Amino acid sequence: MTPLADLLARRIAATGPITLADYMAECLLNPQHGYYATRPALGGAGADFITAPEASQMFGELLGLWCAHEWEALAKPAFNLIELGPGRGVLMQDALRASERIAGMHEAMHLTLVEMSAPLRDEQAKRVPEAEWALRLEDAPPGPSLIIANEFLDCL
Image (cartoon, rainbow, N blue to C red; front, side, top):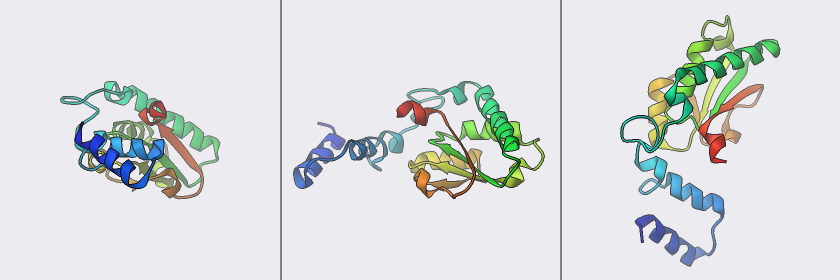
């Protein structure tokens, strides 16, 4: 039995059944044993898999231009740009680079990355230092928002 399986078995024995959400949170985010908390799961060397933003900057750049189009269609309000499950921050880095020439957009933007993994937040901060972080979408600022995601939606 792995240490995580032992931890889960002891928890269930002590408190009873757990939800699928609690099980997945432990498997992915447990500080000592969770998949995303203990290894470079995505990206280059030593990673388990690669995602579209890691393979080509075009994916993130296209999303950045889509965000610019939608912002303009909304009459250019102050807005939140939110990414769910931003991995290493590559998608947002590319999206911001593509949209930086859109007059007024970055000034109107409040950038939030929704990420539960502390090691991934550290990686994201290297690529998107101007971002703020939220642990859940409900913790992001209220107001007009454009929400992007990649691997997060695949995991759902």
